Image (cartoon, rainbow, N blue to C red):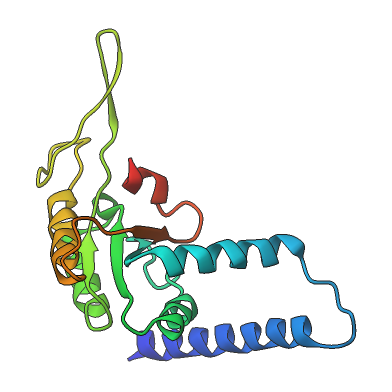
Length: 181
């Protein structure tokens, strides 16, 4: 399909770009390497190493554009047993039929949860954070119970731990902080 061809071209371009960056960083020409980038990757590797489960947050309006398959590969290269879960966030901003198709597509690769973060509502005396699990009501979170249930299952599966460490990754503005809240 056209979508698959476009996806493959994007992946090829991403891989080519990353190889070029790696070659520049490893070259003996003394090329400038951004210290912020180096610091970011050092922190990123710490998060990946310490997390039992990685949640990659994607924007439902553009899941392929907000997903980094190269990062997923890097995670699995460091630890092939690491669990990665895709969180398709902002599902209230797309039609339900699109959501179902995206879930089917993404679940071919990794476990995927549909999610809508809760929002604040004005009440007498200030703002109150509303939350819920499977409500379509305006302002309430959707998919939280599914996500918690999935994480509990991973918790049971990881050497009978009573707690697991969850790392959250994603490009800017996909809703990582909202998911945490």
